[in-house]
Length: 352
Image 1 (cartoon, rainbow, N blue to C red):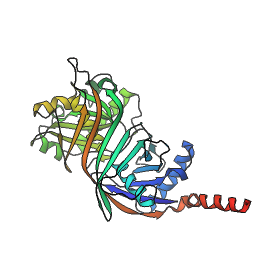
Image 2: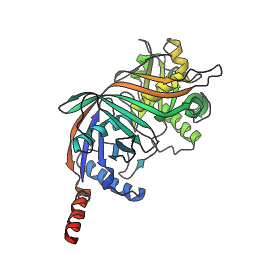
Image 3: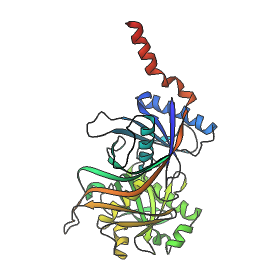
Image 4: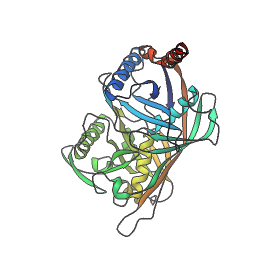
C-alpha cells in the first residue's frame, strides 16, 4: 500500500494520507491496520505524525472526495480518536489525492468539494495557486442549510461554568467544524497577548484540566483529543489573540477548524469570543486572529441575530492556507493491500 505525507502550514505535524478503499470497512479491523502503519512510521522516525486522513472518490454527486480523519494519540501505536475532524489534514488530503491520481491535477480556480465522514461537514477547497511541491487554498466550511446558533452550543447555552482548575471557570462550548472550549485567558491570570504567548507548562496544565472538565460535561472521554481548547483575549493589534492546545502540547498556531469555530463563536451573542471581539469593535466582518505562529483571519457568515440572539450559521471561510507535498512511499506492513486490484484483474482474466 502507498502512503503519502503532506504538511499544511500552521499544523503541528504532517498528515499521513491513505486510500480508504484499500482498507477494511470494519472499524476494529481498520484500527488494527492503522496500528501496524503507525508502528512502521515510528520505526522510521515518524513518531511525530499524529494525523491520519483516509480518502477516496466520493459516490455522492455533490462531492469530489470522501474524507475521514483519525487522530493518533501519543502513548501507544494503537490509540486513536475518531470523533472530530482536522482542516489542515483536509487540505493535505486534497493535495495527496491529486498527486496520486485520485483527483484531477490541481489548477488555480479549481474547487474540490470534500465530504467529512466524521461529522458530516461540507468543505470547499478552492485552489489559489499551484507550485511544484504544493498549493495554496481558500477554504470554506459550508452548511447544507442554515444551522441555528442553539444547535452550535453543545452545552445548551453560550457560556457554561465548569468546576476545574481548583475553582469555577466560565467557558463557551461551541461546535463548528470541531467542538472547542473557549476561555478568557484573563480569568486565568494572563493579562495580555505577550503573556499568553509566553506562557508555559503551568497554563498548559490548567487548560488541560479545564478541557477535561469540558469533556466530562459533554460525556466524552478525557483521554481523547476532543473537545479542543483555546485561551483567548483581545489582541494588541485588534481582533482576538488565541493560544490553543493540541495533542499533546501547545499548538504552534491554531487548528484550521479552530479558526472556523472561533469565527463562528464571535457571531453568537453571549459567548466568550463574542464578548472579547466587542471590546475591540471586531465582532462583524473579517475577524483577525493572532497566534504564536502568526496571524490568520476568518469570515463567518450568519443570518442577523434577532433581539433574543437567535441567528444561524451559513458558512465560514479562511484564506491563505498553504500545503507542501512531502512524498509517497510503500507502506511495508500493508503492502499486500496495494495489489488487491491486480489480483482481481488476473482472476477475471483467468476465468475468461
